[in-house]
Image (cartoon, rainbow, N blue to C red; front, side, top):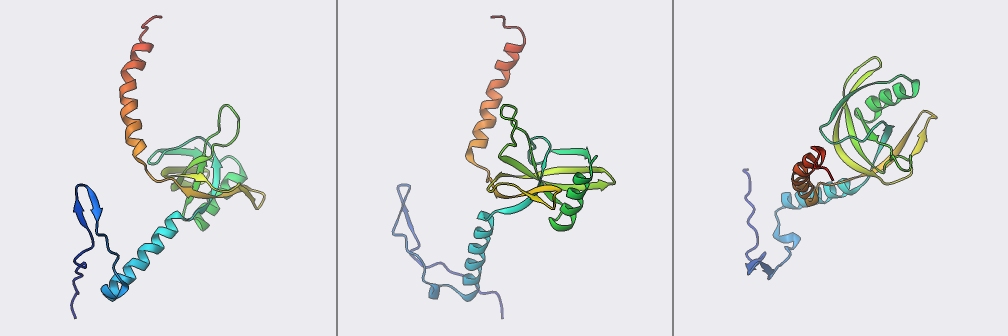
Length: 180
């Protein structure tokens, strides 16, 4: 052997006028053995991505992916959270802010990765947004953990950036004393 090329069945789909017609699903017998394995693997990856993950939770401030902050853990619970995050959660934990109106923890958070750790000083970088999918549970009377569901990027983010850019001059005009 060599690498076997995969040829799609002749009539997977015919595109006409922007609509799909004549869509035919391939039978397993139409696929080489390795394609069947890839399909199973792809399905499993989709299942894992849709499943929740458990993270230790730190209530600090709302964070975003790629945001980097340094913090000092001044209490034993915080130090234990860092230690356990490094040992059991691949250096990851969830960071949440507090809702200024209700005083409660915001349901959306950001998974962060501990990138530097020295004594009480920790540097974290935001990686991925999520929403709490279960009520947080107290872990060993020290810190909370919770199951989370990943928030995928959506088309609304690009629109939000566009609207934000359009608002900048209006805010400057308002702040500049447009008087009124």
